[in-house]
Length: 108
Length: 120
View 1 (cartoon, helix red, strand yellow):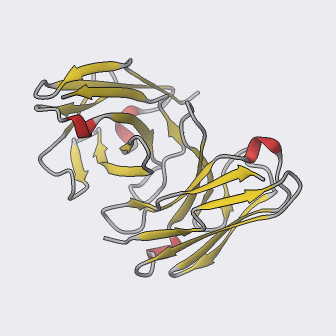
View 2 (cartoon, rainbow over the protein chains, first blue to last red):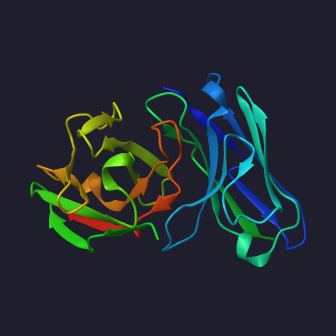
């Protein structure tokens, strides 16, 4: 099983700042099948990025993904108030698929 | 429009059985894998497994093998998640999600979630 470790656990920033979230895999993720989700209380997960770097439909360009192999990054270039939530990376390259433990993005 | 509508809040006791549902509409139900994901209190998302509605092929997370059962009813385009014996540790929010055209794709469409509370 591929274990995904996200860092930091909590990120305290202000609107307008840049957020950089990391996801490290215990082994290489095949075909870079790595996605990022945003989760807010009471809502379903929202797919942001798939294939490590492709934005999902209707996701604003301030969200970008990068990385390959075992190291992946989600960057939010300029934070908007609605961006504050918990973010999860998810690998779907090898069964069993797995999620990271999450990074909470909170207001500073 | 793709929609996944899940059944409502469940409050059960340990030892009871439960079957929750995920009704799909707006696409060909048998063509896309369905994933089940849970979000337990104070913890992150956990991938539970997949089912392919056309032939009910399943892939379970090893940590859940034997504890839950996935099934579908093609006549009603509904996927199910079932427990025969609930435990208090099964409490949490359960989501169904629809993958892309292959199992090697992440869920983009999700149900609204079913909250399950199990008392001991």
